Image 1 (tube, helix red, strand yellow):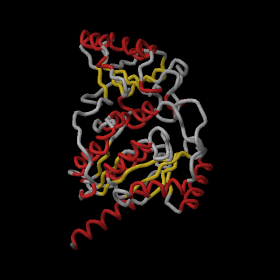
Image 2 (cartoon, rainbow, N blue to C red):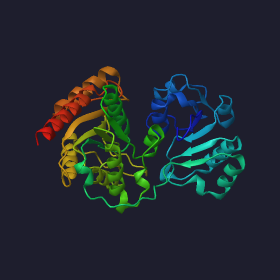
Image 3 (tube, rainbow, N blue to C red):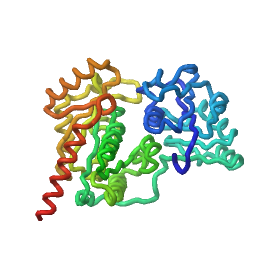
Image 4 (cartoon, rainbow, N blue to C red):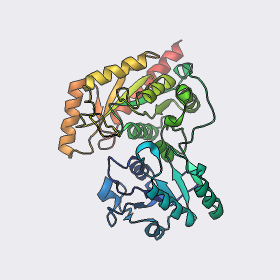
Amino acid sequence: MLGKKRRIAVMAEGSFTPLDAKTALGVIRYRPDEVVAVIDSVRAGRTSEDCVGVGGAIPVVTGIEAAAAHDADTLLLGLAPQGGMLPDSWRRVVADALMHGWDVLSGLHVFLSDDPELAALAEAKGCALLDVRRPPARRSIAARRAAYVDALVVLTVGTDCNVGKMTTAIELHRELEDRGVRSAFVATGQTGIFIADQGAAIDAVPADFVAGLVEHLVLEAARDADIVIVEGQGAIHHPAYSGVTLSLMHGACPEVLVLCHQAGRTHVKLMDAGPAPKLRSLTEILRDNERAAGWIRPAPVLALALNTMLLDELEARRAIETTQKLTGVPTVDPVRFGVEAVATELQRRLDERKRRASNE
């Protein structure tokens, strides 16, 4: 990960649950061979599988010393505290990791390498502070260039935050690769970057340049891919994160969308306490996403990805069936039941585009 094979201790103190530890869960699901322990003193003594349903026997431990007993050599901050800052309690953990000579991987909005005390400690111990949310120096303005790539561009969008946009994108990418399709996954958030070893955390980029950066990422990915899957962020109806969603739509110029939703969620998830807005109906959200994307390039919702992690299997199947009937859109749970139907439709569309191009 990020330049070398690692033995990672994932920091998830007090929050190692499926809904709270998004980064931890993503890294454990997709790079389990590099995770040797999870730090959460509240759940110490259990396994990753017990806590989040993935990761098998990866142990949950009390702290740095316990993780060191599992030969960890890297600390990864697996949570995103409110505001993306570094809590004082975490600062002590980061310092302890550096004292052990470990690299520290962070997706926080505050950059650890800019902290004089931590930077000096890292230099003294010969280890690195890697801030994957640090924006690239490149600043360009979008000009709808991604609409003209030969690759089929797909963007995952959501009804809310933390509903499965990244997971859906990765599952589609992996399914297509397994079929021999030249596919690329474009990571646009810190968790995706940890998993893919590439990408940019677009929520750390000045607003005027987000769409331009996304456009650049798509153009680069399309050079060696027939299908480009772009990881979505936020939601167009979210009071805090609608801007980043629109920038993704208008920078990536997708040809199709995949709408992601968590079964049973009825209200927008807000970081601050207060009255959360009620989610609009799925059909309304679906049409609004199509309209917003269509301001730059028409892009229908190809499928709906339903996150059923809080349901049992029978409830999950019923929820998928009900959602498909309600929206009229093919509905899948990417993690539980796979994305075969969506991948097949993407391949069909790709073949159709190639036939049209050869006849022109």
